[in-house]
Each structure stands twice: as structure tokens, then as C-alpha cells.
Amino acid sequence: MTSEVVVVKSIRSSLETLSKRVKTVNPTTICHIGETTSKDARHIYASFLKTPQSDTIDLCVLLQPAGTQVVVSADLVKGGSGDVLSELGPIASPGPDGDTEPFEYHIARYILAQEDMLLQELH
Image (cartoon, rainbow, N blue to C red; front, side, top):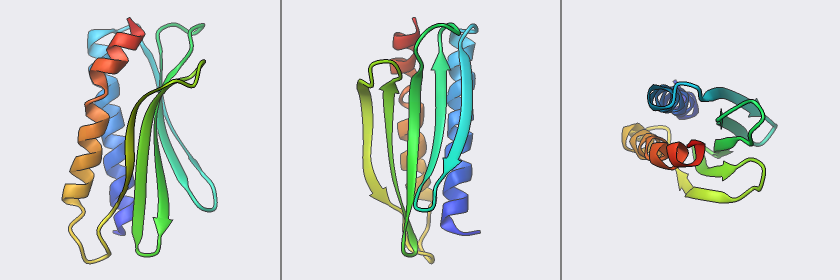
């Protein structure tokens, strides 16, 4: 598998885990995990809602191919106001022969660390 495929699977898995953890604490939370792709980037996101009428809290992960690497950045944003609650600055994956596990772990750790902030914003 290419490193991008491995990283995408890891990100989706982390977002699903985060969604389950948030719903365990706050069962009425609505969550949608999705993905959009353009010619030069891939966005994987999870949108959380307290109620159908409330603004979303969005955790967005951006993947941009850069030669044999993938550059990943992420942020947690209030959907209505656009306020950035948290950011993960751009980090590059190892090359094709490198071990992607530490890279995946760093991204997963960032995603899962957003639980407290999400719960605070959804309360």
C-alpha cells in the first residue's frame, strides 16, 4: 500500500474512534465523517452537532501529496464562526521506504486529543 492509503485509513479509523468516544459521553451528538477530493488535496473530516439546528464543530484533516510524501495538517473549527479551536501544523510523511507508523501515531494522537475540546463545545 502507498503511504497515502495507509495514512487515510488511519485517519478515518481515528475519526471513527473519536466519534464513538464523544457519543458515549454525549449520546445525542450527531456526527458525520466524510471525505472530499480535489486534484491536489484530500480532505477527511468529522462534523459534530449538538442538535440539528446548532452550528457544527468540524475536525478537518488535509492531505496534500508532495512527491513521494504526503503532507498532513488538521484543525478543529467552530462551523458557524470559523473560530479555530486547535491546529496541527503541516507534517510530512516519511518517504516510500520509511516507516509510516510514528507518523500515523502522531496524527491519531492529535485527533483523539480533541475529545475534551469537542465535549466542552457540545455541552
